[in-house]
Length: 113
Image: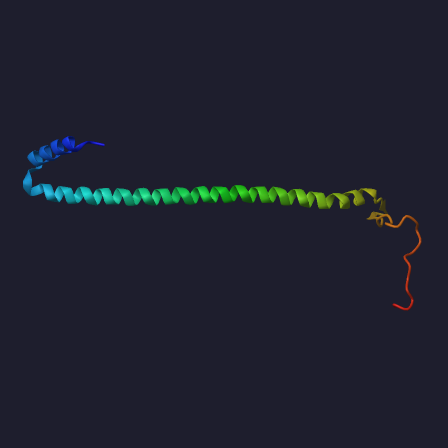
């Protein structure tokens, strides 16, 4: 950052080059340019922050999808094993093996029916 002496030298040179009539107009234009530059910089920083936030959300979404896929595969595994124990009969799948250790029918409560 220039010190006070350097700024004084720049002001004197600008006064000599542009003259006292045009100097206020040039200062206003420079101030407008600086304000526009600040606004654009601020807007760009905001866009970059939003992009970083979206990237973080996308990363979280991928992690959640991977967890759900793992849970789905874990839930499907017993059913796939059950399908593996079935044997085709006349082009159709045979019923799954009984969950009961013996082949007796389940108990029936005659009063409940």
